[in-house]
Image 1 (cartoon, one colour):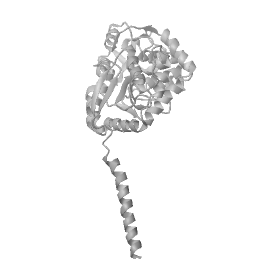
Image 2 (tube, rainbow, N blue to C red):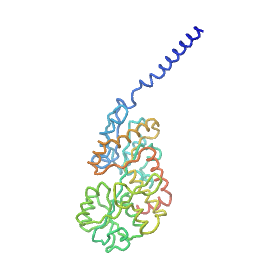
Image 3 (cartoon, one colour):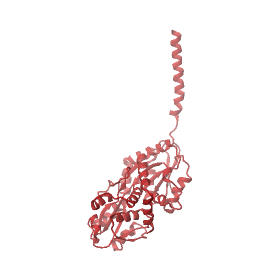
Image 4 (cartoon, rainbow, N blue to C red):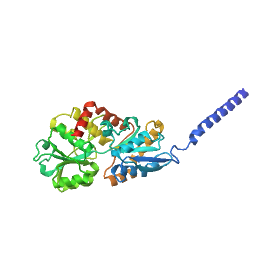
Length: 357
């Protein structure tokens, strides 16, 4: 009996030792990003909104990423952001050390741009940062509320950048859905030029990002130059147009319901959803295809906790003039899927036609 007990104790000791040896290496493993350098590849030039966004992230991400790696920002602009997106898709290694911080990548892919080689559906999505646009009109156009667009005192003259620009398409798709006639003036180099054109009376109808509106547009409202009408809204994970919670203005969907008595439908409505998806995932954070799932999950967790970091929130609020509204991981994937669900052949054709008119 005593020998059996000794054998049992000996066997238990051997098993415990074996388990300890097996488990020890797992605990001894260094954090996956220790001693590493992570590159945030921004597909626009230094100094722009996407670059500023990337650089704020770079300051706070290290403490939320296991191993506290060095984070560097690399700018790779060109072809409206396509060069940088192609690079991450085609050239960057799927090792979790290159993270694309993109802007404006949906429309080139959906419209079938000849230089587009990336595929957003094949790139694991880490997160997306949303930003709606605010639409306003000159006060002397006689439009005090969105429903007045059906009977303005003066013809609507829309000012924009280029025919294929998402900002311009969002404006024009909304007017098309409301069946409001307008004249379109394109070629302005930036928001500053559009504001001057509004003040001079060259145009009387345009939009700008919530950031821009909060820093410059509201000044024109206070001076009585323009009247804000609505926010274009965002594309929710379930595929519905929803209000950006950072603005008190009604969404276009709410405006359409009030004027027409129902939700917008048809190819133009689906095209508007595509435009809304571009605003919802305005800053598109992704990694190269075939990046291991474990690294994707680590990055998602790190970005989520970074976005929740009070210091990060304070700095983004100070610099970008509002708290970021983000989708991370599966929620971001749902928004991405909703964009491509809306990209039916009729919706694509409607977008292409408008981009050429």
